[in-house]
Amino acid sequence: MSQQYSAAPAPTTRPDPAVATVAQRGDWWRDAVIYQVYPRSFADSNGDGMGDLEGVRSRLPYLRDLGVDAVWLSPFYASPQADAGYDVADYRAVDPMFGNLLDADALIRDAHELGLRIIVDLVPNHSSDQHEWFKRALAEGPGSPLRERYHFRPGKGTDGELPPNDWESIFGGPAWTRVTEPDGTPGEWYLHLFAPEQPDFNWEHPAVGDEFRSILRFWLDIGVDGFRIDVAHGLVKAEGLPDLGSHDQLKLLGNDVMPFFDQDGVHEVYRQWRLVLDEYAGERIFVAEAWTPTVERTANYVRPDELHQAFNFQYLATEWDAKELRQVVDRTLEAMRPVGAPATWVLSNHDVTRHATRFANPPGLGTQIRTAGDRALGLRRARAASLLMLALPGSAYVYQGEELGLPDVVDLPDEVRQDPAYFRGAGQDGFRDGCRVPIPWTREGSSYGFGAGGSWLPQPEGWGELSIEAQQGVPGSTLELYRSALALRRSLPDLGAGDSVEWLRAPEGVLAFRRGEFVCVANTSGEAVTTPAYGRVLLASGELTEADGEAKVPADTTVWFATV
Image (cartoon, rainbow, N blue to C red; front, side, top):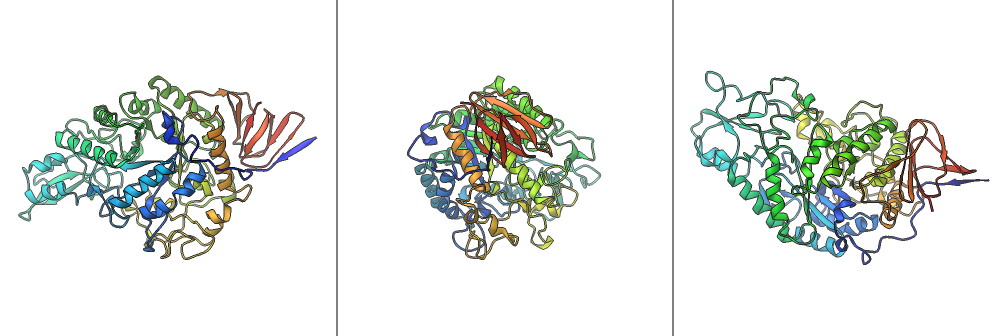
């Protein structure tokens, strides 16, 4: 006798915020599911086409019901928005497009009442060129003490007409811009590893460290539960700012220690920050965005006296391939075990093509892809990859809209694009706008429920059929798959925190592992496979058939079993 199991039954219950909320658990971050909100694209409360903090606040019950533990907010600080808020002019103010400090305070309070924690972005590698320090440094001219808080240098060449070294910007072109001095003459150059509007701080100067420790306390006093540290690997530069010697530097990123990235001196900064954080009760945390050559070097950032978590970009960049996935899982767990930090798992964020589109394309194209690919294949793999990620030991990150199976919007007209890298052709592809298109809440409306006044990036036709309204309560929908998975993850003692898996023998192209009385089977191959039926089927990303103690798992499908 055989039995067929459909994917993702609608859960019969929702997490109860009054029972075992994350705020009541110690070491909550070791197994937390953290949801990334990109504020400008999440929800618009005032109809200006731009998402805002009040919009986020109004949708917090949705995130509670989804079953996540914490919300990470991308930057909402006062900014000229040259790089979507990652160019900060005032770290203690909210940009008017997002609201004000009272809105931030209300959001944090409401989140806590719902059992959610709030993590905010912090950008310590660089400021905006409209930051008061930088504006004064320019106005005061050469010799200004404020120029010492950035990297100002005289140029090379007869008249200083060449950059001080050969470093290239991540956004393309030289990493140096020459200033016009107050007397109107060409003058010194300043370093910016990203856009010219983002001058890098000089972390050798004590005033920079003092300022950021003060910023930490400002937001901790308001009530945030942690910080995601942007470009955490970039603060400290090699002594003397030596030439790199390569004219194809972007290809080296992530493959080697660079003179401007992953320098050992950065760790003393975080030891000082940890002392500040430990002054506060309530299990506050730091999360590093640290692009490093290896997971072993990533582990340096999460030693016991430094940060709590670091994004696992090696996992994000791994293809949908059982062998490659097993290798990165093993290496990650092995690297984190000696430092006692949890592994993290992430499939998408605001800087990369959504995984539903990456997996829809042939392998080897990287994390920024311009083609839609096979949409059905991409969604099937994305659902399977999500169940695999949520079964692994440690903490998981969910980027807004991935619970809806959203693809990247790959056909945005050039005239609407806003990614600064797009306009600096020698740099990265610059197609990050595709993953930043505002998410759909309803089937219909000028912006599918995002807001009453359209959206800052155009949403594609048919976006409403992927909306929360269209998927909520629908058995087999991607939204209900996530809700079911997160509810099970919270209720099953063998899921969540941990530092190991027991690999099981499986056919080629299949990953199978045990965690206590739980088994996960992920078929990354293009064909259905037969595996043992390890017990009761808890959840599956696609339909499978079970008979005579065996399970027929379709291509690109993940299954969760309870062995008792």
